[in-house]
Amino acid sequence: MRSNHHSFIDSFFIHRHLRPNNKQTIMPKTIEKPPQLKLYYFNIKGKGEPIRLLCAYAGLPLEDVRFQSYQEFLELKEKGHLAFGQVPLLQVTNSTTKDYDESSAASTQLVQTAAILRYLATLAGLHPTDNPLLAAKIDAILDQEADAFAGCTAAYYYKRYGMTPLQDDKLREQVFSNISNEVLPRHL
Image (cartoon, rainbow, N blue to C red; front, side, top):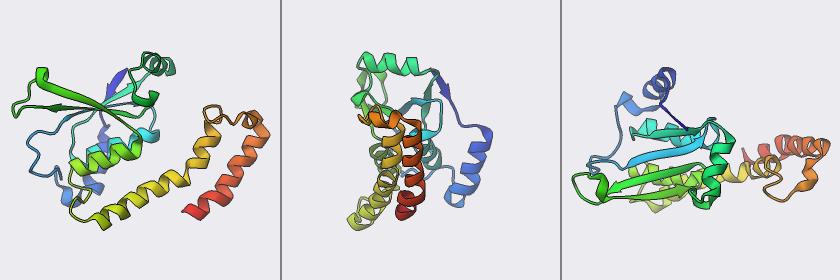
Protein backbone atom coordinates (compact mmCIF):
# COMPACT_ATOMS: atom_id res chain seq x y z
CA MET A 1 0.00 0.00 0.00
CA ARG A 2 1.12 3.48 -0.72
CA SER A 3 -0.21 6.69 0.72
CA ASN A 4 -0.72 9.34 -1.97
CA HIS A 5 -1.34 13.03 -1.81
CA HIS A 6 -3.03 15.06 -4.53
CA SER A 7 -0.72 16.23 -7.25
CA PHE A 8 0.05 19.90 -7.70
CA ILE A 9 -2.29 20.06 -10.70
CA ASP A 10 -5.17 18.42 -8.77
CA SER A 11 -4.63 20.79 -5.85
CA PHE A 12 -4.44 23.82 -8.13
CA PHE A 13 -7.68 22.85 -9.86
CA ILE A 14 -9.49 22.23 -6.60
CA HIS A 15 -8.26 25.44 -4.96
CA ARG A 16 -8.76 27.63 -8.01
CA HIS A 17 -11.98 26.30 -9.49
CA LEU A 18 -13.98 24.44 -6.88
CA ARG A 19 -13.61 26.22 -3.57
CA PRO A 20 -15.92 29.18 -3.10
CA ASN A 21 -13.92 32.43 -3.07
CA ASN A 22 -10.68 30.38 -2.94
CA LYS A 23 -11.09 29.86 0.81
CA GLN A 24 -8.58 27.54 2.39
CA THR A 25 -11.30 25.54 4.13
CA ILE A 26 -15.04 25.50 4.40
CA MET A 27 -15.12 23.21 7.41
CA PRO A 28 -17.37 24.67 10.12
CA LYS A 29 -15.68 26.40 13.02
CA THR A 30 -17.56 24.13 15.46
CA ILE A 31 -15.16 21.26 14.73
CA GLU A 32 -12.13 21.86 16.94
CA LYS A 33 -10.16 19.00 15.47
CA PRO A 34 -11.45 16.92 12.57
CA PRO A 35 -11.21 13.15 12.90
CA GLN A 36 -8.34 11.33 11.27
CA LEU A 37 -9.54 10.10 7.89
CA LYS A 38 -7.86 7.25 6.06
CA LEU A 39 -9.20 6.10 2.67
CA TYR A 40 -8.43 2.61 1.38
CA TYR A 41 -8.98 2.08 -2.34
CA PHE A 42 -7.33 0.87 -5.51
CA ASN A 43 -4.74 2.97 -7.32
CA ILE A 44 -7.41 4.31 -9.70
CA LYS A 45 -9.96 7.12 -9.56
CA GLY A 46 -13.13 4.99 -9.57
CA LYS A 47 -15.39 5.23 -6.54
CA GLY A 48 -12.59 6.65 -4.41
CA GLU A 49 -12.16 9.86 -6.39
CA PRO A 50 -15.36 11.62 -5.26
CA ILE A 51 -14.23 11.03 -1.67
CA ARG A 52 -10.77 12.43 -2.37
CA LEU A 53 -12.23 15.47 -4.14
CA LEU A 54 -14.75 16.22 -1.39
CA CYS A 55 -12.03 16.09 1.27
CA ALA A 56 -9.80 18.38 -0.78
CA TYR A 57 -12.68 20.78 -1.44
CA ALA A 58 -13.72 20.90 2.21
CA GLY A 59 -10.20 21.09 3.59
CA LEU A 60 -10.53 17.77 5.42
CA PRO A 61 -7.15 16.07 5.87
CA LEU A 62 -7.20 12.65 4.22
CA GLU A 63 -4.62 9.90 4.18
CA ASP A 64 -5.07 8.24 0.80
CA VAL A 65 -3.95 4.60 0.94
CA ARG A 66 -3.95 2.96 -2.49
CA PHE A 67 -3.54 -0.76 -3.03
CA GLN A 68 -0.61 -1.49 -5.29
CA SER A 69 -2.07 -4.83 -6.33
CA TYR A 70 -5.37 -6.68 -6.32
CA GLN A 71 -3.68 -9.31 -4.14
CA GLU A 72 -3.12 -6.70 -1.43
CA PHE A 73 -6.87 -5.99 -1.41
CA LEU A 74 -7.72 -9.72 -1.33
CA GLU A 75 -5.44 -10.32 1.66
CA LEU A 76 -7.23 -7.65 3.71
CA LYS A 77 -10.60 -8.97 2.57
CA GLU A 78 -9.77 -12.59 3.43
CA LYS A 79 -8.51 -11.56 6.89
CA GLY A 80 -11.82 -9.80 7.53
CA HIS A 81 -10.21 -6.35 7.82
CA LEU A 82 -12.67 -4.71 5.39
CA ALA A 83 -16.26 -4.00 6.43
CA PHE A 84 -18.55 -5.83 3.95
CA GLY A 85 -15.32 -6.98 2.25
CA GLN A 86 -15.43 -3.82 0.14
CA VAL A 87 -13.65 -0.65 -0.78
CA PRO A 88 -13.70 2.27 -0.81
CA LEU A 89 -13.35 2.10 2.93
CA LEU A 90 -12.95 5.19 5.07
CA GLN A 91 -11.38 4.60 8.46
CA VAL A 92 -12.50 7.37 10.81
CA THR A 93 -10.59 7.83 14.04
CA ASN A 94 -12.17 10.19 16.55
CA SER A 95 -10.71 11.36 19.81
CA THR A 96 -12.86 10.71 22.85
CA THR A 97 -11.16 13.57 24.67
CA LYS A 98 -10.64 17.23 23.76
CA ASP A 99 -6.86 16.79 23.59
CA TYR A 100 -6.24 14.09 21.03
CA ASP A 101 -4.48 11.09 22.44
CA GLU A 102 -4.11 8.05 20.22
CA SER A 103 -4.71 5.71 23.16
CA SER A 104 -8.19 7.21 23.64
CA ALA A 105 -9.13 7.18 19.96
CA ALA A 106 -12.10 5.21 18.66
CA SER A 107 -11.91 3.98 15.07
CA THR A 108 -14.82 3.15 12.77
CA GLN A 109 -14.92 1.77 9.25
CA LEU A 110 -17.35 3.31 6.78
CA VAL A 111 -18.07 1.73 3.40
CA GLN A 112 -20.34 2.55 0.48
CA THR A 113 -19.36 5.68 -1.41
CA ALA A 114 -22.68 7.48 -0.93
CA ALA A 115 -22.64 6.90 2.85
CA ILE A 116 -19.04 8.11 3.05
CA LEU A 117 -19.83 11.21 0.99
CA ARG A 118 -22.86 12.05 3.15
CA TYR A 119 -20.78 11.68 6.30
CA LEU A 120 -17.96 13.87 4.98
CA ALA A 121 -20.37 16.50 3.64
CA THR A 122 -22.12 16.66 7.01
CA LEU A 123 -18.79 16.85 8.81
CA ALA A 124 -17.70 19.71 6.55
CA GLY A 125 -20.99 21.58 6.86
CA LEU A 126 -21.91 20.97 3.21
CA HIS A 127 -24.92 18.72 3.85
CA PRO A 128 -27.75 20.68 5.45
CA THR A 129 -28.80 19.53 8.91
CA ASP A 130 -31.42 22.23 9.38
CA ASN A 131 -33.31 21.83 6.08
CA PRO A 132 -34.54 18.26 5.56
CA LEU A 133 -36.07 19.02 2.16
CA LEU A 134 -32.81 20.42 0.77
CA ALA A 135 -30.91 17.49 2.29
CA ALA A 136 -33.32 15.09 0.54
CA LYS A 137 -32.78 16.85 -2.81
CA ILE A 138 -29.02 16.50 -2.41
CA ASP A 139 -29.44 12.83 -1.48
CA ALA A 140 -31.65 12.30 -4.54
CA ILE A 141 -28.85 13.53 -6.82
CA LEU A 142 -26.39 11.19 -5.15
CA ASP A 143 -28.83 8.28 -5.39
CA GLN A 144 -29.56 9.09 -9.05
CA GLU A 145 -25.90 8.46 -9.86
CA ALA A 146 -26.14 5.05 -8.19
CA ASP A 147 -29.28 4.19 -10.18
CA ALA A 148 -27.82 5.43 -13.45
CA PHE A 149 -24.73 3.28 -13.18
CA ALA A 150 -26.24 0.17 -11.53
CA GLY A 151 -26.47 -1.63 -14.87
CA CYS A 152 -22.89 -0.76 -15.79
CA THR A 153 -21.67 -2.00 -12.44
CA ALA A 154 -23.60 -5.26 -12.67
CA ALA A 155 -22.45 -5.89 -16.25
CA TYR A 156 -18.81 -5.09 -15.48
CA TYR A 157 -18.74 -7.21 -12.30
CA TYR A 158 -20.97 -9.92 -13.76
CA LYS A 159 -19.31 -12.73 -11.78
CA ARG A 160 -19.90 -10.95 -8.49
CA TYR A 161 -23.61 -10.59 -9.32
CA GLY A 162 -24.04 -14.14 -10.60
CA MET A 163 -24.53 -13.13 -14.23
CA THR A 164 -22.32 -15.79 -15.76
CA PRO A 165 -24.01 -15.62 -19.22
CA LEU A 166 -22.20 -12.26 -19.58
CA GLN A 167 -18.95 -14.17 -19.90
CA ASP A 168 -19.82 -14.21 -23.59
CA ASP A 169 -17.99 -11.19 -25.04
CA LYS A 170 -20.61 -10.52 -27.72
CA LEU A 171 -23.47 -10.57 -25.22
CA ARG A 172 -21.55 -8.33 -22.81
CA GLU A 173 -20.78 -5.91 -25.66
CA GLN A 174 -24.50 -5.79 -26.54
CA VAL A 175 -25.42 -5.13 -22.89
CA PHE A 176 -22.93 -2.25 -22.65
CA SER A 177 -24.22 -0.83 -25.93
CA ASN A 178 -27.82 -0.92 -24.63
CA ILE A 179 -26.76 0.70 -21.37
CA SER A 180 -24.84 3.45 -23.16
CA ASN A 181 -27.43 4.18 -25.83
CA GLU A 182 -30.72 3.58 -24.00
CA VAL A 183 -30.39 3.38 -20.22
CA LEU A 184 -27.90 6.13 -19.38
CA PRO A 185 -29.55 8.80 -21.56
CA ARG A 186 -32.83 8.25 -19.67
CA HIS A 187 -31.08 8.84 -16.33
CA LEU A 188 -29.02 11.80 -17.39
